[in-house]
Length: 311
Image 1: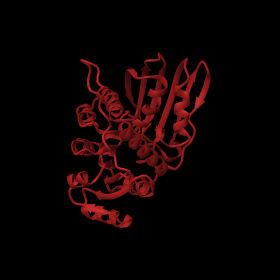
Image 2: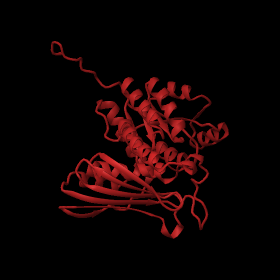
Image 3: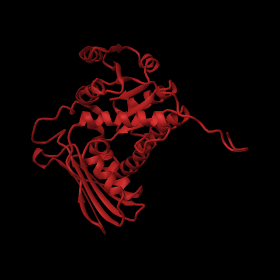
Image 4: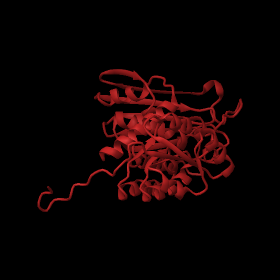
């Protein structure tokens, strides 16, 4: 019973026992991670694929024996979950349409590269009462995900240092499979790997209260951050590192000691856990901490940093 004068309690939207998941995107990330993870997921049905290149969508759909869609809205109408493997500024407006169609949103990072677009996705999820989760790899891949949760329970942090130096566009070697990506080439490491670093620093040290950004060689961006805990952190980000210099690391230091992020493996398995988290949020009505609203906050921070860098 609703108390007099109080708001009516809302129940979470119904989710079928075996939700149908549609994939939007056909690039290397979709082929290597999203599609195999969706096909292997025991708690859902991989229903179909839409892509901006119809021939690529047909090829990927044929590989997994699922339907190919020539219209994203038709996919939304058929599915309970829309899974995105698209450039951020293509993803954002389609995610708004998917939410309006009642689909839960399994988003990629960054959810958008403008604050307005990122907020529009989060607002649409709220307005249409659909669950959302953003696939931030370090928050789902083990043992990294468990390590983040363990550090988030500690206190007395002093400082942290993160680096994510990718060799997607190396000056001294063969570009990676993700080099044929105009948005990555245009936006660089700040936007592609910056969300990963922030997705760990924020739950451990608290939200960012100030950010200062500086350029380095190639596309290197160095962020100096302050957090609500009072701790300071740095993040060095690049997609253009020399092959021998590439790597990922994150270290936090505080009253309880020094703790380093462990290596992680099985990215398709991590994607499956992201889908599990989304389905849990959809069934319980409890927002996941890695939802579109959190992703919108990441975009706000990255956009502020980009604004300081200038042209």
